[in-house]
Image (cartoon, rainbow, N blue to C red):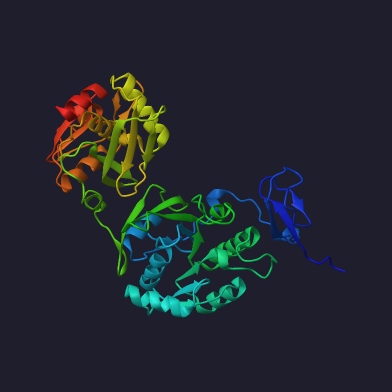
Amino acid sequence: MAKPERNVYRCQACGHKSPKWLGRCPECGEWNTLAEEKEAPKRASAAFSVPEPLSKVHSAAGGRVSTRMGELDRVLGGGVVMGSVVLVGGDPGIGKSTILLQAASRMPGPTLYVSAEESAEQIKARADRLRIDEGPIVVLPEISLEHILAETRSLNPSALIVDSIQTVYTDELSGAPGSVGQVRESAAKLMRFAKTTGVPVFIVGHVTKEGMIAGPRVLEHIVDTVLYFEGHRGQTFRILRAVKNRFGSTNEIGVFEMTDAGLAEVENPSELFLAERPVNVSGSVVAASMEGTRPLLVELQALVSASTYSVSRRSSLGIDFQRVGMILAVLEKVAGLHLAATDVFLNVVGGLKLEEPAVDLAVCAAVVSSLREKPVPPEMFTFGEIGLSGEVRAVNHAEARLKEASKIGLKRAVIPRGNRDKLKGKAYGLEILGVKDVHEAMETLFS
């Protein structure tokens, strides 16, 4: 008699298997790491793949389909790849369901929108409020994954949207929806379905307080693309960023503005980020940053004040805290500024996160401007990397940054001398000032 199939529990930390669930792994001692999974049935040897030379492997078609949302296509790498699985994460209320509903209305052919949390009436009410074309959208309020896949095969849609993965369950596991095993197995089944049918799948994933996809972190390793919505619900614009993309770059971002009619694409985000910049105010500097292939002009603000505590406070929003500390140390030792007894606060206006070192020079300018109470001229912007000895190093994509600044009306640029020398006379209608170190940069900015 054949041995009945049974589920086992595997530790996500060390891989230890147990026939029953345990609160603590007996192998590695970690708590709450055992997840239920189905034991794979044994296959005949003929079912296994055989090795073959890569030169004889046929290239997959792997065509892309435009979502007809330029910003979303940009982040995806030029459109959604057929048979791919895209995970969309973000804080509650950030706009995950909104953007997918808008994309569903613009995809070629019918799109199946599986609502595992809301009723069909609620989806209809949102579509009416967003004033979108409801014709191509087919709604399925269902949480059983087996029924969802059966209906999808019957409909053969242009795309499948599952909102959300934490509320879907599979009958092959006994755990409740949202548990580690259920989320992982459901995502794996959706991945297998996408690869065998060629239907692209979008999955909505909830985010915890720590900013991670709720459930197992392994969910991000299963899917092809992971998109995160960034921004605050109190602000009108949102940033869509790819943190994983097997078919494109992870440096691209999409900028949207939340309106009464849903998420509107922002074609020129630099103008949006600088729209309310104060004029002739100390501590405010325009920095030229790059997000993938897109140049962005953003406002960087600094506040330097005398500290009333025994230990000075340092705070930064949108810039790596460790890098800010390094720049402040350079300003104190190399530039001779006295910052030990001051509190320093830095903020990137608009909630953006700037990760490249090209904004170092803008951080220096903002801190010195606030410390000396000397405004940076409003028509001036800057970029450049700061070394530990105070030198200003050249950065990539200097010409793209200069073109973007010229487009929005800025007049003067303080950039690394190495970048200026490579321009070969190209000025793009700007007065370009090259600097070699922090001393020269400060003299140029505040002369």
